[in-house]
Amino acid sequence: MNKSIRNRALTGTALALAVSTVLTACGGEDSSSSSDTKAKNAPGAKATAVKDPLVATFDGGLYILDGESLKTARTIELPGFNRVNPAGDEDHVVVSTDTGFRILNATGQTLTDIAYKGAEPGHVVRHAGKTVLFTDGTGEVNVFDPADLSSGKKPEGRTYTSAEPHHGVAIELADGTLLSTLGTEEKRTGALVLDKNNKEIARNEDCPGVHGEAAARNEAIGIGCEDGILIYEDGKFTKIDAPDDYGRIGNQAGSDTSPILLGDYKTDPEAELERPTRISLIDTEKKKLRLVNLGTSYSFRSLARGPHGEALVLGTDGAIHVIDQNTGKVEKRIPAVGEWQEPLDWQQARPTLFVRDHTAYVSEPGKKALHAIDLETGKKITSVTLPKSTNELSGVVAGH
Image 1 (cartoon, rainbow, N blue to C red):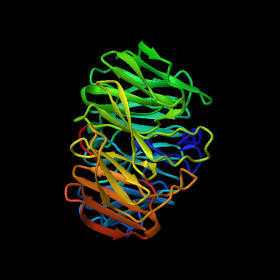
Image 2: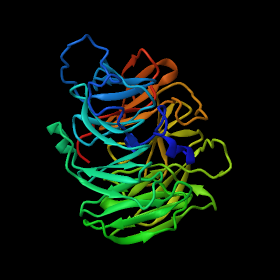
Image 3: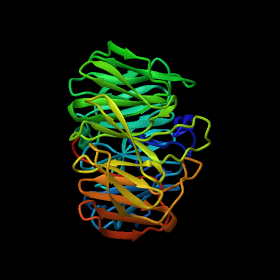
Image 4: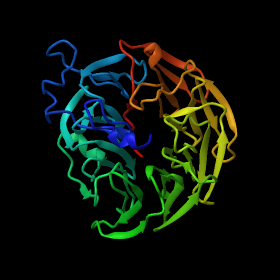
């Protein structure tokens, strides 16, 4: 995801990665009954609660799926390119649309009136009981407690506006300090840290092309750079250099149980689309970076963490590669989907990995399929075929 990433929510086909999740957005009017958003179920049908819902996007809408059976509970029409991320509670998902972030009550199968309007909604970050939205087109950061979404009203929360709009990300720590990226539309350089009153207390601009974030054990926060990764911990920044002059870590996945962050790794700044075969493991305690060759490429929707902190990568060979985060050893490869190739356009569908507890959910757009896989046994629990090919995949995730 290069500079085109920041266009993720730009057009009606925008936004990628957020960072409803990683990105989310609001579409049109604030009301869930607006003409551009309607359920395809029978008129007046009352929605029943969906257990542990998943949400998958397709061209022009959303599928709400039962987390156990994978059966479609409801189809919601929503024009444009939409992205989805967990909101941080057991009921809601953040949807990024062409006009901002919008809150979907996935359990109740309805888009709520809660919206955070703004061009190019970007990353969505959950940490320490707070959810943080970064709107690229305005530079606005919104922080709220996801537990407050249950009221059906927009939560009261903290706001901060970056000096200039850019494709950025922010995260609030347990003590109330806020880390937010620095940049402009043309150049991104690093990050700053603000106290509870939005007063700057730390800054580092040694992170060219800053992109993405992840939290490791003991609240070590990593943000990716084009020449390594920047770690913020205990009130100070530390830069971990990549072994290559250009060694871009743009997407990361963290675990509260591990000091190791999982990152991607790219080395060709001129590539139209680099299909890397190595991933990075960043030790936030020892401040060291290890590269692991998977023998297969992957995409920005391929990274996740397992219930024991293990690093998970969905390869284009169709397998989930389970990597010991401490040694870098690939412990097993779990067959998931058929072989695939990452498309040139980042907004185009490709197999996507979403992990919740001990279950990996993997989409297979080429077959309009969705699979649930037990990470412990490596066996498929169930698979379904959907009416249309899906693009992004997420679901409710309570707690942090």
